[in-house]
Amino acid sequence: MKTVISSLLFAVLIAGVCAGETPSRIIDLQKELEKNGRQALAGFSVKVANAVKETDLSPSADVRTNAMGIAEMSSQLLADLREGKFGKDSSEAKAVSTTIRAALGKLDSVIEEDYKEHPGRANVFPPAGTPNASAGMSPDAISDPELKRRYLEAIANEKQQQLKNSQQREARMARRVIMRGVSSLETFTKEELIDRFTDEGKSREILREGLASELKR
Image (cartoon, rainbow, N blue to C red; front, side):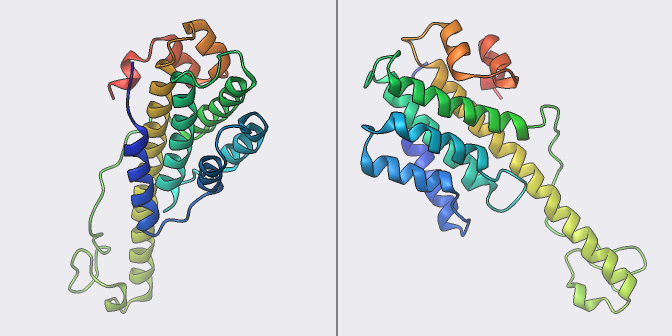
């Protein structure tokens, strides 16, 4: 399966940064790798794998940028393997597999496989008993301290739920992108792909099952 994804992901990544999200260390390393080329990739792999493991994928305003940073870095490295820039048994190839295992392990650790996205609300309605209540009204318009506290709590809960939706959506998308990249490595047998690019976990299960159901989502 040959998929051109690097330019699209880079556009998505830049869009997230421009929207005010804080870049993670993985994005800094991505730029460093682009600047210095792939010559030192083998020695670079531990640094990249550690950065992947440390990347914050908690429900937050940064989760989209960070998840796409992991996907973009992984996609660039897999593209080098796919294009034959180094042999499948080279130290560079082993370095790439180290990073990919770290990336997929990180994503597996945050994805809740049975998670159902909760519908969002543009405006939260104030608690019952609020005078002149209207959805999305300013909390400062509520004079009763208890009603105001409950309203602020409901707003915070709604925001957190939407961040959780974003976390799960972006992590799943990043995993799909990486799995497509792994599956496109035609120089490796399926068993080699499973052994080299995944550890025990959902990603290994998906790859073993041929990716069919996961890539259609």
